[in-house]
Image (cartoon, rainbow, N blue to C red; front, top):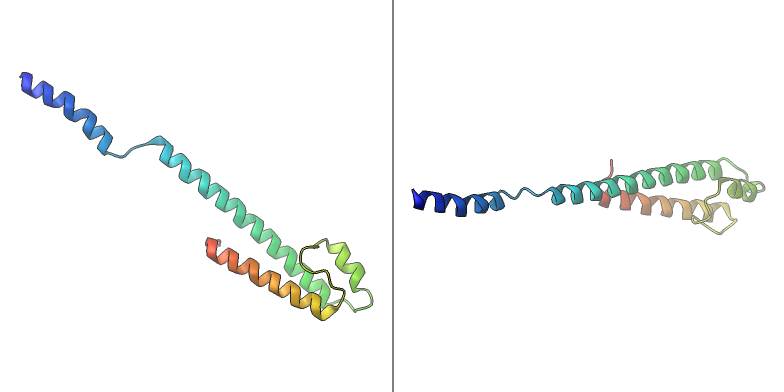
Length: 107
């Protein structure tokens, strides 16, 4: 009887520790997935802005292009006033966003 009680007292904590249940592990995964989702949402919003920028640049004549580009407020795409260069820079920026989106596994 003594032996069975002794084994139960020693084995019970060992069995509990071996189950691997930990509340902190789940929280860490949730926080990381939440940050990943936020980053994916930001990438999607940036892609929408870049697509809108490309569409506006394509359908605007070169004379009014500078005014339209300022109105869209995407200063990190290009600093050029040349229509061809603006489209080239915007497509490169879009490709970089798509590549980053693919590496993160965003939908």
